[in-house]
Length: 338
Image (cartoon, rainbow, N blue to C red; front, side, top):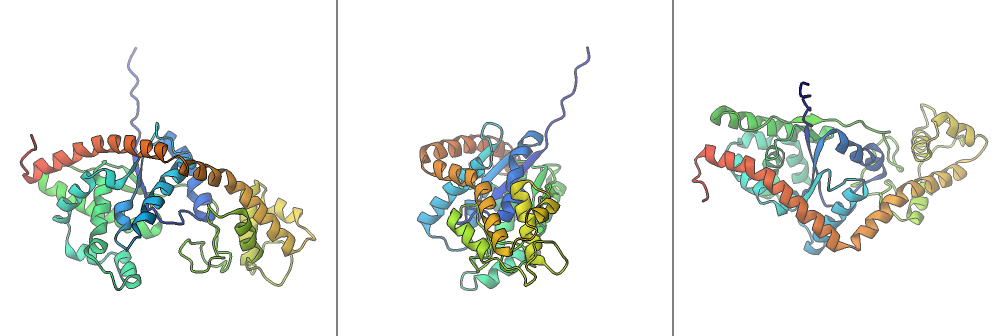
């Protein structure tokens, strides 16, 4: 009987920064809930990108706490350390080693055209450091060192995958095929969730208006308060319409949180006012997020377990990274370490 060839899974590399407010309701609905399912289709590598975080000033104790919280959030989202590699970037020094080599194969002009450098420079005018300029090279190293096939990105991050491909192509052209060329991966997106304060805008954790966004770690009372203040209109009817962006957004949110269709939501609230509807939205969202929030809080009480996950993940990641790094070092002429 002939052997059946088993198709090798593609490698997906995802990185999240350990910021204080990890995810919004929009992130949760659009991406987080799908992460666990990706593990069955791909070989997933999840990285807490704490080295990228220090391009802007960080309070050290807070950065450490946020790094643990990011790790706990991945686990709470269903990432299984037995199925996927989950690690903290700074625990695998090969990233920084490869980044230095790749810096020498990246052109100044390429980096100066990166739109995020321009954006971050304008927001951190008193701290335009070299790391802020060269961090796309570290991001390229993150991707290339694992020979990743796919990198989940939003539209604003696509440029980073493109420069990683450019660097890899340049290196491959000089030294023969070394790096796999990664492709941007646009995951299946859930419903698009808009700001509660400005429903024409996407919900964002960086919004200065605290009432505009629901964060996954918000307490129930905060969620209810934010929905109570959500911008609607003067029509008073829970029904979708082209001139009703606020209500359209709330119907989408309630529909996702309850599993009802938009038509069923409209029927349920026929004849009821916006006050009742906003309160119901708050209750439904709080209940939807509760298991995730509780699991993160439980994991944060067990730092020993988080340390174990991070340590074991870093060991697995380091073994993979070492293969690529040693190949690169040999090709550029470094004397091998005996």
